[in-house]
Amino acid sequence: MKPALLALAGGALLPFAFAPFGYALVALLSLALLFRIWLNASPLQAAAYGYLFGLGQFGVGVSWVFVSMHEYGGSDVVSAAGLTTVFVAYLSLFPALAGWLGVRFGGGAVLGRVLLLFPAVWVVTEWLRGWLFSGFPWLQIGYSQTDTGLRSIAPVLGVFGVGWLLAVLAGLVLSAWLLGRRGRRFALLAAAAVLVGSTQFAQVRWTQPAGDPIRVTLLQGNVPQDRKWLPEAKAATLQMYVDMTRQHWDSRLIVWPETAVPAFYQQVAESFMAPLEAEAREHGVDLLVGVPYYESQGDRYYNAVVALGSKPGRYFKRHLVPFGEFLPLRPMLGFILDLLQIPLSDFTSGEPRQSLLHAAGYPLVTSICYEDIFGQESLVGLPEGAYLVNVTNDAWFGDSFAPHQHWQKARMRAIEAGRYMLRATNTGVTGIIDAGGKPVAVAPMFQREALTGMLQPMAGATPYTWWGDWPAVGLCAGIIGICLVRRRRKGLRPLPGGEGI
Image (cartoon, rainbow, N blue to C red; front, side):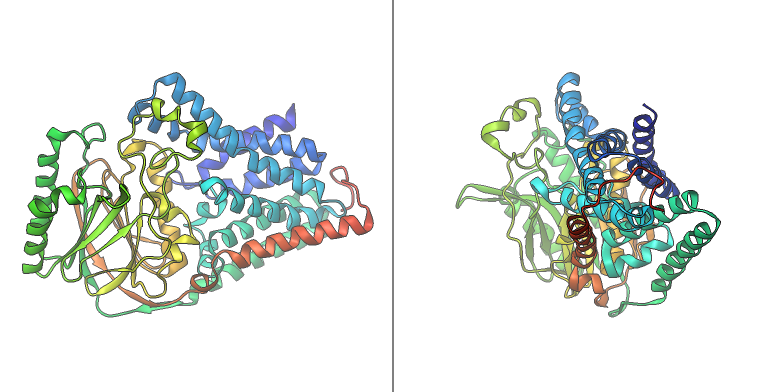
């Protein structure tokens, strides 16, 4: 039972490497522990240990799913707990797959397995989890390094490249423990080389300022989720946002959160939007407003951001939240709608490529809610876009890990793109992130706040902007392929831990 308990404990500790805790070293040690357990395992045992690791990792790290379902989705305790358990059980299949692949395709020297194969299978299965069945790329290990030197590799290889280097470092730490004195020296020197080499990328400026800084204001309405869609609260909510906007006509751009307007755009276009846009133009200010948008042709509605001011436009959310904004496999899973009472839970996704919105004199890349957790998809519109804007409503998750973890992902998007990120939310985290992923200004959570700061438009492109995730994922897939071919040619069998060093 010892390896099983260690795997479960190692997985449960991993979320503490992410926000809001930020103990980045924990990710290194957790992976090193898991790799050590895999060395002693058969393929099926490795899958079981990986599954236990995943139960700990996601059982702790995405526990906020229960909060969303029970406290804000209207589900009873038993149903919310049951659905959360099923979700965690599903996510745990990916670390299990990594364990099976790592041992099944392994064999030979331990050094090769812990430095090449195990990091590769971990990254490939994380990538698989990020797109299969709409994708859920939460707690990918690269995000844990947004405040370490490894983040410098993100503009080149993205979050998967950062995760791969972290996994290689975990293998080097394990090698230093397993190997003799000479091997230990090699492992430590190699680890130092990886750290020093990756930080050298921090000296490279992939993007550069485009014009003067712009004064911007981000609105955080802090509207309670249980009142957001009440008809009797609509007028007060709209007036609150208007009052906050009028106090900041000295800004060039004002951003409202996701679905800040609790009504379809068409319902308030003439009575509310038109006068607001006219007033904004009088002051030379552009507005980005989150609002549901209805199209009578086809009877479809969208989660949208509309630009009001000098150059009107609209953006429709492309990547919808399963079970929150649409129901996958509706004939089989329709009963879930009876358990979850979520308003507007049947959105239509926008076109994959849409014209960029323009505000404050520049084109921008827009994302809504958890669209900004998908690195590859966030590249659409770059390098044309001069900055990034994300509007979201993380009130669904209360005071849990989720808003902080989401904020960390937004920071990674800024690093990968070499662009400032403006993030306006209903309850937090609302803030301005610079092109290096560092917070410039952050509003306190769960307070009504108008956060004002400076935005620097950027030009140019990072390598990641051009090639996305493919080099990092392709490298790892290539390593797995080489190991598979090698096994078939030599007929290698998995070796017990410690042999073949």
